[in-house]
Length: 592
Image (cartoon, rainbow, N blue to C red; front, side, top):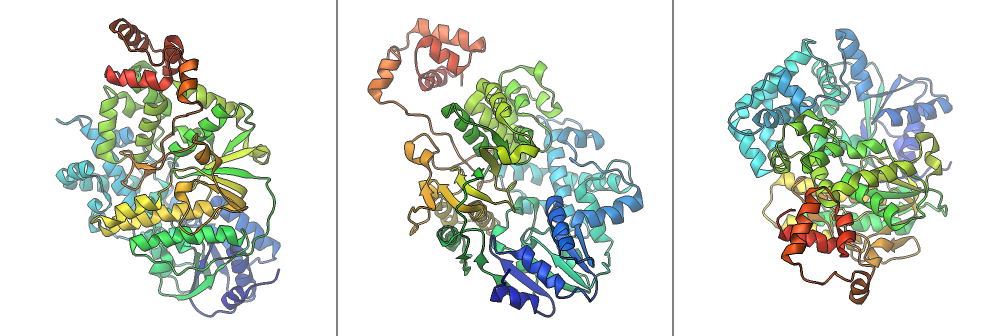
């Protein structure tokens, strides 16, 4: 292929460099050509972001006959150095909150579920330390990454205890008394000050490097190359840092995207201009040279699991001819939190059915309000999302998820899916012919409101990352993109390649994002907009009793049937009223 002038400048460069590459700009091709130009020199190490990227990169280097390039991930290097040497056992999924409470012998104190609240913070403190470049736990102030007022109050009160137990948890891993986590052995690798025997080290996805791995990289003697896109940093919640800004290397650009056309490039630039509100005015240029006209792969992308799940449910309930679907990753992962808590456990707690709860933590909650209080004290965003889903759909959830699974194709048949559903984090590095965005991303209106308030720098950085999430979503599209009107930047007009989402226009789609208790003040969860398929007169004709007043007799009947477990849908059919009317009456009777 013909290389651009920017690519040629990188290939001919000397010394340590950093490459800021826009989405779809052929950075892998550039890195391969960089390595080819040095194939007769010292051995080269290519550090990939994850296992799938590692396998793809290894294939490309082999195809080019570059046998002197070793392809690894940070964790694969650390695994070989630390886990083998110390004969550790690895716990891939990490520890659940109740397991940490048991390991550390935490006991219930005067406050409800205090042992689990403290265990949750101990776990997060350990993850924070393991991803940092700090040498000791005491070198970090855990309060720096706790934002919710209720959670900060708890942490401040028990700070010394949390720090002491965090050190004990890590010491138990170090001594092999308990299995180690992926974060732990990477940290131990960093603290060992390893020397990597390579003349050239190429570090991919540098905008999402953990400080621990960046520290290892920067200490090496070989020529260092960092590749990434400063606007694709979306792992700040995992304490990642943008190494492109941290490294004082000569800067190179890849500003031509071969993935998409100029219309989508202009849309992406319009999104990036929102960073003016956070004091991070971008100087990025994007030239779209993609010319794809295919429509083979169609994807729906969302900011959150909640937003995606609700959009998928809407897809199958409002389109009875909906075909096969596929969720990037495992479809079951969208109904489970990282700690293994199931959406069904939360639903069982909501229904007061403790016998059906399998998760130990959820099983300790007396009622749903206790779980909501726990979420507030721990800032557990994933559990908070589950709480929101259950409150929105309650007992309709099992049937809806069952239908989603019936339509879901296997990994091997991914290419046969009519629609692919994914969150932005799961589709990082992917591309699709046609993309539809769910309206659960931050809007410029919300962004301006939050940025104008007297906020700390860490809040502005999180807002910046919210903009990055929308940018990454937009730049997954190769050919066309459907975007909600509320997310369309000023100055960008709909066109043949960029159109307003049809669900947004019909009134059956999504309301503007709102802040939610279940995430940081920057977790902008979408709310499903209620269907309005009929006029007022049509509703009156369809539901004869819809506007009749509720009597004491009808209220008593509603209370009995609701407590017997009838769903809102069945109650609406029984009383010949709309689901909205039933929900409103349940709230009036303080049943919801």
